[in-house]
Length: 470
Image 1: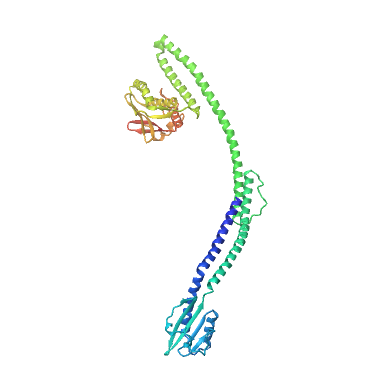
Image 2: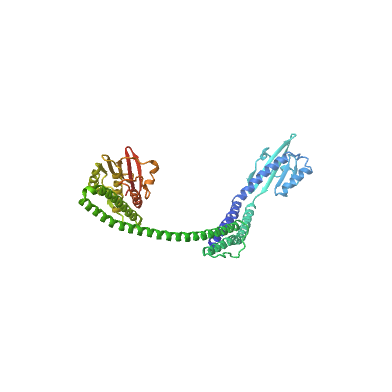
């Protein structure tokens, strides 16, 4: 990185110097002569205006001084009237000559508002001033023949200056680049030591109190804060790991207890059930009342055992369960007769409205368990002679599997609670349960990347599982 920055630094300085100095040389070579001529012509007009305000016929000390100043600037100046030469800087003429003694002083070419003209490498201005009936003629000339050579000579001199400026600029640029990059390089070394986890990350370089020095201080503060946070996080991770191990052990003990309890309860229940049936056969009149009561309690215990097993099943669901694309519509149509017949036991009218050929990636056994829990929930909460309606539809790339049952609506404050484990708002009758059916539905739906919810409809409640479509 250092070499790249230095190279860029030097290239930029070189381009800058070439652009500035080279531009100046080019500009001088192209425009210097024209600019010089422009300013000279402008100066000659201004000098004429100044001279026109003087009394040149008297040619006093003031007038002579102004004219001598023009001559010192390189101008050739002639001032005369119709009778004599008042002032001349030409070596070919003197004040004793008459104006008409040389042909260049043709008075017809002199104007009161003269303009400069260029003739044979000369800039010339010929003007006249009329005062008190007398006319004074002023002729100003400047030789520009040597101007081109002067411009070329100056351009060469500036070219040499450019080379010198480039050399000095590159030396200065290299020095500045080194001074600029050195603290950045030291920051990189310090950052590498921090990356390697070294506590002594100093490099011995003395940073100045500028922006880079302040950046170095901020990096050190950030590094110390990160180390402090990492130390705290390690402590937290250790505590969490310890607590996680305890939770895993507790969960394993719970699973073992559920499996053992259900196993131990199933056998005596089966024995009691069979013996009570025999007892009812042998003593039908005396034992009928006890028989009904015992069988009811046995039914309750059997349901509790089944739901305990369901809890155990859901808690043991692995993330790598097998999913495959299946025709959900066909699977539900296959189960329709079974559930219609089951609902008829309570004289419940059961209708299926299945949209055909809805394909879904699923675990058939788990989704069947969830649907069965929906149907069992509808059966338990629907009164005799009411209606249960099953619908499967696809809309906006979503699949909706709903079960509606007529009956008591769910209070709004319980809408979220019904999906929790061990929640039940019924008790004291044969249909009581320990509240895991809808909890199992929620867990299975989540495994299929879906959501489930309940809505109070007119005359009943509708439970829905919603899944993403293929």
